[in-house]
Image (cartoon, rainbow, N blue to C red; front, side):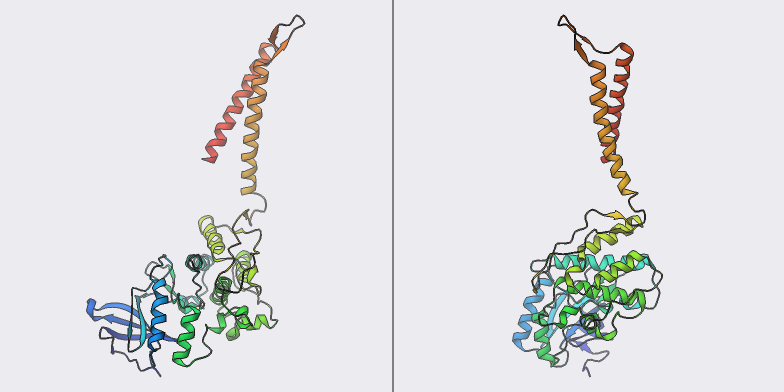
Amino acid sequence: MSQLQEDQLFANRYRLLKRLGSGAFSEVWKAEDVEAGNLVVAIKIYAPDKGMDEDGVKIFSQEFAIVFNVSHQNLLRPNYFDKNNGSPFLVLPFCENGSALKLIGNNPTEEEVVRFLHDVSAGLAYLHKQNPPIIHQDIKPDNILIDINGDYKLTDFGISTRIRSTLRRSVGNAHSAGTMAYMAPERFGEHNQPVKASDIWSLGATVYEIMCEDAPFGELGGVSLKSGAEIPEVKGNYSPELKQLVENCLAKDPWNRPTAEEIRKKTELYLATERWYQNVNYSQEKETKTHNSAEGTKLENVKPLDEGQSGTGWIIAGYIFALLGGWFGLAIGISIATGKERTTDGQRILKYKKSTRNHGWAIFVIGVISMIIWNIALA
């Protein structure tokens, strides 16, 4: 049982108001900063009971320095880091709208689910592009908060494998490498180092739970998939394209999952056009089982799903025909209008009579107009 209590003054500055959540490593509290006019904040306190030794705190502070340099609208970045009685703690903005847990059981619309996917994948894509990549390792509804504008923000990122090992030693918990229900199948194997694609599986499990009111494999997570279970059908009043995207995120093979950047682009297109586009190929280049993940999948050669080869395909074909028609019009028109031939005595005279030459000039003008239209369309 935690020794922290409501109305307690933590670190001689923060009055604890309400426990918002707790995990194997930490507790999150709503608190007032009495040194800042009772500003309401959220405090995440690690190893709250036993604390950490000096080496552990040093490792924690060194690695968290990386987190303070990241900045993205879909990341809830800590404002302050310190320690109290050996317990590192973070001060974060308080999100009054709570977490993505509130979406579960409320039958969110397709647009609401897509917006959630877009915001979380955008934050993940930013983390994955860092050097070295920051892998979240614990994507779940509790760690996705909703700000005052209704945007979704990832929290609890930057807790590396090294920090987790240090925390496990401090709190005496040997089985806390993430939340099992959202852990990818590769996390249960011999080579269980997390990769970028592991975050994608966790995102897929989270979205599945939001859509279907339960995690895809219950509390067992990816270990069921690794043991031969099939990906359960995504149910609900959602489009086949959205369901397929979620199932792709839950693929057993990490290299068959879309990247965070691909999901971001795909959902951004949907939110802008209200139409689904698909990537021709989800396959990624194989990666080593380290923190680095393949960057291979890109959103190229997209086509609208709801209209088959129409829509974008016909527009592109129209551009091509306009370009070819313009060039042919210019070439053929000028050839007819100004074409000459050599007579038997060596003189060069106009090849066509006046009416035909007029037709040539008309064709030339049509070619010019086609080229003008083509250039305007491209602009």
